[in-house]
Image 1 (tube, rainbow, N blue to C red):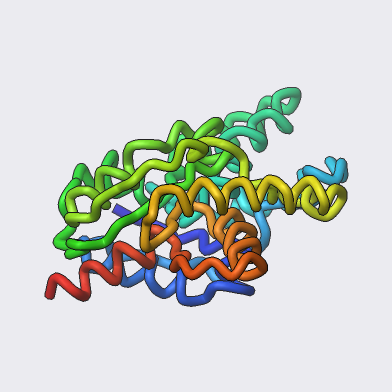
Image 2: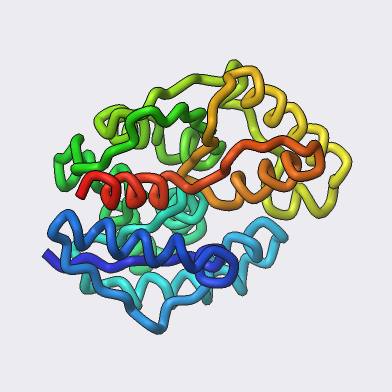
Length: 244
């Protein structure tokens, strides 16, 4: 089984520890992960800005780069949604590329879903006992990729106590260009997320999307809220280290 890691721009540029944790966690589970060095952005920022021709160039590069792998795994529901949903939409009128885009979409998995659905593992040997965790359902992961149970399954199996916020499925306000074009509304939405997490009295906020966590963490800093914010992959890898 050939498996490639698509690390995403956010992990590459801002959260390299997430990329490292992704590789280490997959290797811990027996996956011989590969990293194609020619990978670039998935094209989502350009797509959201309306630069369709430019996005198609990026998408064709991405499709070609990952064509020989059985699975492509990434620590992001947002970039995963771009590949799984928007690539096929863009190439619907081009039969040759459309077929390739659908094939890649079928082989692309967010990391926690890959663990539970492809590797068929629920307990990965992580120890997160006594951790009180609030999980944020990112819009792209939940609504485009139907990711809800996989991260929760892995966290519960590790012994974490998941305390659901009443607004766990509500947008955090990031939305890429949305937060740039409408910063006041975005900041208000992030504050609402912060309040929801505070009500849970959780110690840690986690999610499969680093962009959402970055936005909420910024709101928490401004509000002087002392809650740890950590990507679910990094949290699980921390748990594996605690379990050894």
